[in-house]
Length: 418
Image (cartoon, rainbow, N blue to C red):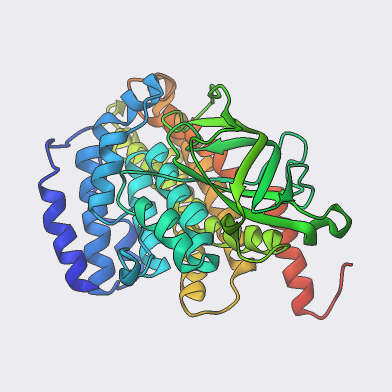
């Protein structure tokens, strides 16, 4: 694994075209000062940090303004092994652990939150369920071609009418000989415009409610599947988000992922892992906001001195740093529990809740510290603020995270809420 990262560290140098020295650049502090990372994890972190500084941060504003998918950068990340971080080497993946994925997501999202989102969807929401529930033929068709950034996948659970109620899938799949026929709509699907396959959740037996939901692998494009208009979003604007509409979409019977009726379990397990990725995205945004605020406050003078020497600014910076490090440690704990094969549902929800709120808080405070400069697109602070907001919504709102946390907490005390 360490040898693999050494090769990646050398490869990233070939991508470096910029010398990034700007007002909101990052110093050497941050992730690694919280703990002594292993050689492998430290090399991965540095590789991702260098890539973020050289390839993502300089173009993040342009990608945001133009709503431009970072195709070239995603391919470069695929070459670095970042689009399949925890997929086994035997399946063609990078073969690292989930802690490595969290570190990589943190650094990539610091450079560009949109790119981090694309990386997250492909790694955890698309490849994750195929890795865990797919058979060998499904992995050949739907996993291996999606490992290196040439292709990306997407994940279709949410619907226009179900919101946070993942068990109320109105999209249906009907058995018809050697085929399944899908009908219904899926909303807010990230990567939808670029995806060449999708993991879809549909009801196969309404009488069983959430136990009657199944998961399917659908290639894209395919007859009977329409990608709707792209949403004009507040943040993560370099990602594509649209509604998928299935109208008598026929797929082979062998495209059922896992067992019939196992879809809700697959979705919940996938979201548990995905929340670690979104927590890491939040960390990257929170870190970028802190970096911006610190560097600006050290150069902006008022009343004859840099504003970082005033107590009110110092208080804001302290609050930002505490929230960031607290969230990072919670995220690391969740990733390590997953790697150890232990239950991590509650811890992943805690990490996502706190990290997403840290992203929102830090980006808000960065704008306050920058003042008028924080409100204009000449500086990245306003983009961080817009990008942060989604982390409290997708893959389970903050309110849902609190229900997950409290439900698991009461269960630990032997108290049933059902």
